[in-house]
Length: 406
Image (tube, rainbow, N blue to C red):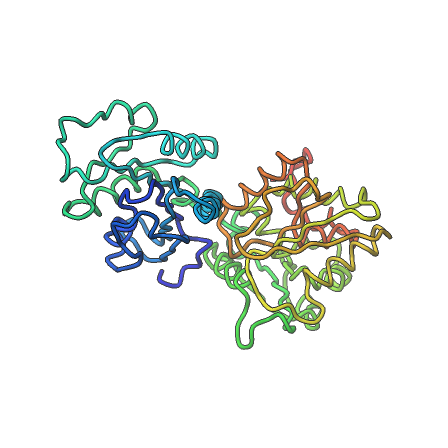
């Protein structure tokens, strides 16, 4: 579990005003000096993250944030960085001192409520105050999950936080969706087409490929892994027809031509679009490619950061396919990592990566922001399949008889 990808971990954000005790709490939870603790307000300037195994909760990422009441020009920038953490928070810990909740805590709660994020209130520094003066009822108007504590002296702090986390863990973390489990059955064979190109790490497979292999094994099925050049031979060598072929999107055209029509075909990117985001929204977003006009801006987002290579999928291949499809002069803008533009109205389309390095909460937040800005959003694999004219085949494994995508 130490090697659990960050995208599969429960993201726990710690929020509050300056000097509320956030950094002391994360140091207690991790049993390490993760964040600097100081009586000087505003010591935590950037979000501090720690991935760990937090038994019995499981693999988590704790995120210590800057004070939400920071001031000055730099303070405003710190607050904006803190607000970006909202997008990937699965559970929020709002820390306040014994004075209770003021406008800052209330605004935090309302933001998390809007996003359907569970909130635990931690009232710190009870060792410095008279507990009879505490107005619990004021906080209970917002959340019943309240912990009274002293981050410095309370021996039960970690136990009490664990208990609250367990009580509020989202269902999709306890029972994460299977990547392929609902479209295959035991003893099925799945062929995975894994090109070994410049973007493939030497000696390794990329994360979506590894996770799909594990999911196939977990569902008591057989995984047949080949390069695109060996695909035709692999299909002929099998005694029974494979239940499904999954390909890297960059080999979609060649694989589509090789795999007989009666064998279902999709891509790793589309599989992850389904479990990380909203496949229906991504499908609708791809249809907007045909509406692009000269001079339109298209935003291409990558969850991870890497040095662009020759014929890079985001910077070369997808722009080339879209220009060939539309015959228009499109301007492409690229963003990497957790940064996501606040103002999306200048874009006519957003194309997102498969998000194997990003948790589902962040992708759903981005979908929400795109819808609020009335900007269509799709993903790499779906956009590529659309431009190649094979999208209907690529999503067919996830279509009900009534035509609904699941």
